[in-house]
Length: 313
Image (cartoon, rainbow, N blue to C red; front, side):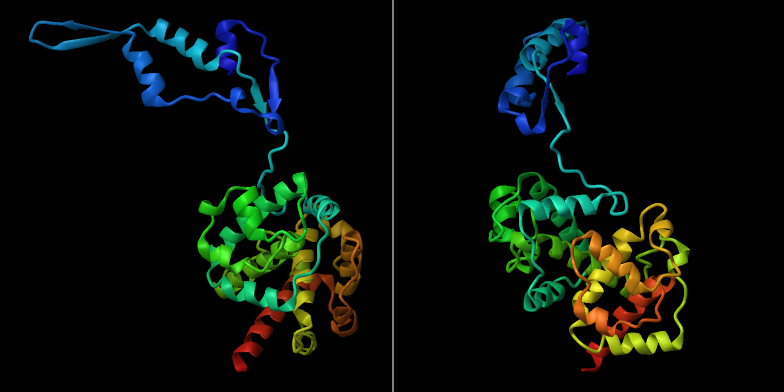
């Protein structure tokens, strides 16, 4: 469009946002139906010695016709209104989640649904793809809102028209989830991704400040084993993971969340910023002597201990 405006010396101030785009605004053509006839109508053939046919194209005329038929009068389409996907640490999820919650009320996933979703995703690639889809969905919900009771699958298929682009296994896994769960589905998938990275001997928090990665003492491990012995710890561990992922991955995180604080103190501040309470089970049962400086190792140990406990059943 910029090139067309320069050639035609037209005013280039005509702009349309994504929210306002209509069919007449976009450059649209079919190669065989539109372009080939235009090119061939401006082609001359001559027979040279040796019976070789030489094609000569009237390029200035072709350019002029392309300009007037397809490009002239088209606006620049701005990015306003397009949900974008960027690195987790760079994306302002606090703002996105507050916007989503302001438009669609959010509730924690029922325990049965949470367990079903967790079990359905057995490979790292599946979790990553499901997370990509949920981030796209959250971007649109933050802009447009929606009916809290609408199933996520229905929203993907009918509102976003993504039914054919989403793997059937992912649709099946999300079958019991609704728009009112979308923030907590994202939370669950993020944790599931990190858990699988641990199983694959990968480091989910490799680029996070070393100040939060100090080793655990034996007494810490004993306290964490007791903590994860109850299923009530499941939602607590999801909140703890989200705190690490979003709260401690930002620039200058150590100035906001001091490593010498206790984990409970850090969680209390983070949950307060979300206008939520720290889970009661965590307040009552999480070890008081665990510091923020140990939080990454505490989460990793808790996940491993919980997995080992399940394997023993």
